Image 1 (cartoon, rainbow, N blue to C red):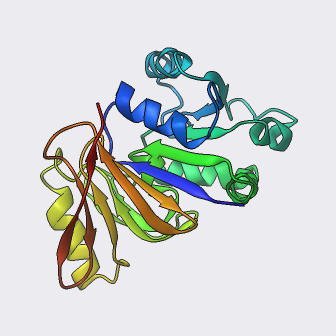
Image 2 (cartoon, helix red, strand yellow):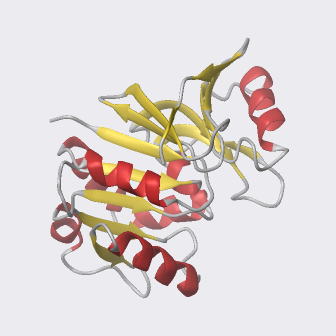
Image 3 (cartoon, rainbow, N blue to C red):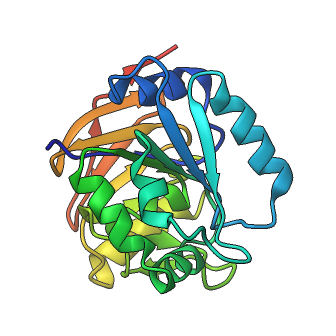
Length: 223
């Protein structure tokens, strides 16, 4: 079964990227599962995202408060696409792991369900990343789900501290090399390999960053 992960570099997901995600499922109107675990109190944002994706998909929302549904595994695996919102990556993963949801996501991943998300919803699929989960300062995070090897850095062009921090963490603090994405840019990995980069903005793109270099990746403009 083909595995697919799409990490988005933060910001609002626009119609072109939404339609791209939907196309990856191969379904005309897929079943989409939305998780806002990283910002569980942001009801206005949840409603906005729900309405936005409902234009192209049948959307369900998964809550862990006050507790997840009894049929969590069955409910999750009934979907074609999982989309994870931004917020506190470390808190989100801790909640998922307490309830065994990380294992369910692994089953979804291995079963061909498309996994995606923005900001924290990008970082979580990798081994590691750059996060502000532990305070306003940026730091390295090394406890991701490891569905994609290496590290991730969203907000590469809209947060002036992300680029220098990511490069420093890789060069000086042994964060694994990985992928950085400008705001709104989507990076797709199929069977663990980089397959596609799409951008809703001319000039915005993604990069591969290791200890020696930062390599700009070719991106396709979607409108």
